Length: 155
Image 1: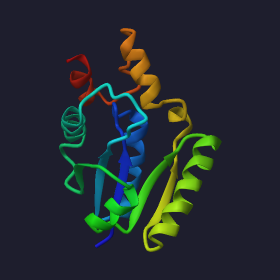
Image 2: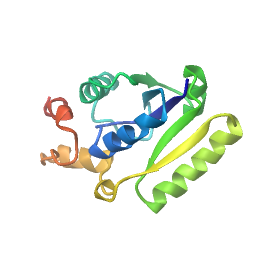
Image 3: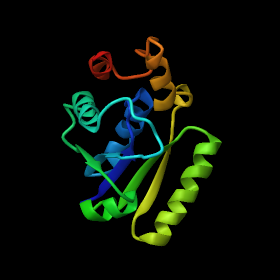
């Protein structure tokens, strides 16, 4: 069974995340959507809210399982039996950052492969950070997040 982890903060999930996940589904038998605790980011939503939001967005997708974790992502991959880690790439700077992490992860646990999926051009400017900023100032984020996520952002 081919298992992958798509890690992130998903604070909130965006249409770019959804696109990467949908395009990854045919490649794997099971994909865990892992909400990692990131101490450097100030969260808008609790872990529970994010899990519920992602479950609502993907309620019809049996190959996905949402899960929260702490610690090194590569260690979590090993813990859940994932042989691959999916990462979305929007920009050149994303690639440089993700490449460095993938190389470190490979040094730590060589059997876990990082898979980079390049975002569609229309999604390259969408990030959770920008969406959070728009939300903080009362802006409309409906064009950037899946419709099933909107009720969680109005709460």
